[in-house]
View 1 (cartoon, each protein chain N blue to C red):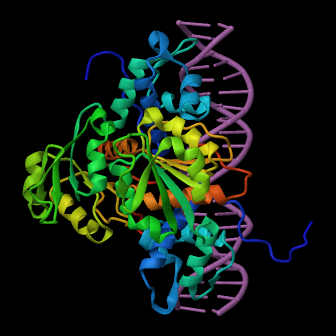
View 2 (view 1 turned 90 degrees about the horizontal axis):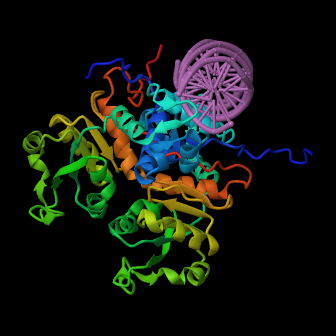
View 3 (view 1 turned 180 degrees about the vertical axis):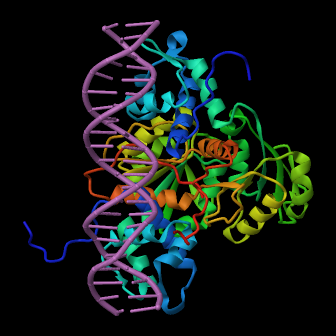
Length: 228
Length: 228
DNA sequence: CGTTGTGAACTCATTCACAGCT
DNA sequence: AGCTGTGAATGAGTTCACAACG
């Protein structure tokens, strides 16, 4: 059924590609490139991957490079944002108001990329009622009513492992579409609710693994672009 | 090394496999399995991968399963710890004493897996001299002398992007072998110093990407960020 | 039986190499 | 000249399917 003469550029792109797009985007923002254009080699050096990889990734977004010239930085940033779905603000609530939550609230990177924390929840009576970074901490029992009222689409879980699944369930029932989970457990959610888990202990374990492994192969190391 | 016919742990295991080993390890610890044995199916369900994947991963550690029975939970945990290099404690210093650092210090998962934070550094005069979680905050200028004195092998960077590279250089010069980096920048280090970067904003972007993408395909498994 | 271990097939991801545009 | 886009080749990772074994 080929009605459109212009196929939308977004085929399905892999998770790994999406991660790299985020990295490219970061470089585009900071390094106000001369002439407003960047080459695949520039980006490759900046994020530590091969130039071929960059071109392959960017080609997946459509034809937005100009041969002999490079990519228009501004246009590229816009295209990446649209592809990643961050060309509009996302509203999120944060559940579990501990140190990690405070760190996230203060983290500029979130607001900069259009992620708005619009509500805080905790089930510790000592924390409920406090104001943190300008937001009132509400009891978790109010999630069913408040999450829809706040029009939150995402939930950030910074709670102990024991309570993570129950609160994930509550957020799911309240209508969130995605969860950023910092508890070291596998959350069970319906397929419509996506989950990204960040497990800090595992990251340290990975580092230990990399450090202790024979000096020979550590593929994470930057590849000299002057490949043969 | 003891006597006997033990084959040395087969080298060459991929980064992805190492990540999953961490996940398996977690399940072994918590779920005190009946009879002390687990099957690949048990582990597969617990961490959300296929049973074949589990068997492939575990086979890489040597022959420690018994056909028709399964794997001895305790023995498996020991083997995984040895393979990941966490069968002994690791000493780490933490640079940048903000909320994230406080969250990490309080995070039980670190100490449980044998990661000891033995020193704190910050270049904010207001923070230097404070005691946080029982540790004195020292000025970053003392890193060259103190890191070797503390016998720290790893460094955790929870500092703003602008200062990350300079402090990575300082830690490298002071002899650390690995860095856990929370700043959204690509750190340049000699090949002998391994880096794992955790970029929280990117994780949120990935979540947004997954949520906005056509309902069709989103595999439940989540992949933490790649190092370096 | 039930479960592991593993060759083989297969899918996904990356690099190579170069044609084609500027 | 420089740089992108992409088929082809390569490599890495995962699943299949089943023999081997307690």
